[in-house]
Amino acid sequence: MNILVIGNGFDLAHGLSTKYRYFLEFVRVINQVVNLNNQQDWKEVNWNGLHPEITKFIIYIEYMH
Image (cartoon, rainbow, N blue to C red; front, side, top):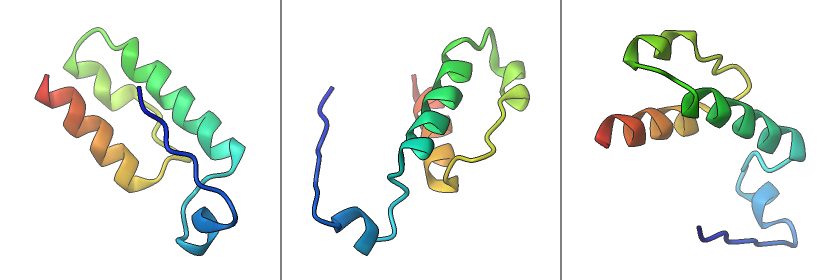
């Protein structure tokens, strides 16, 4: 896994959700997705607190494999 870390306000200047609490929300959702048993369980994932574009990306990645 590659991680790009940029500091000095780049994230805030571009309106990115980079606070630690946003990261924790992302981890919470990923944990739910990883533990899904089938596609019917997708409606049970709690997407609250996650940026809509990240939600679309996770769904796209899961359906592609």
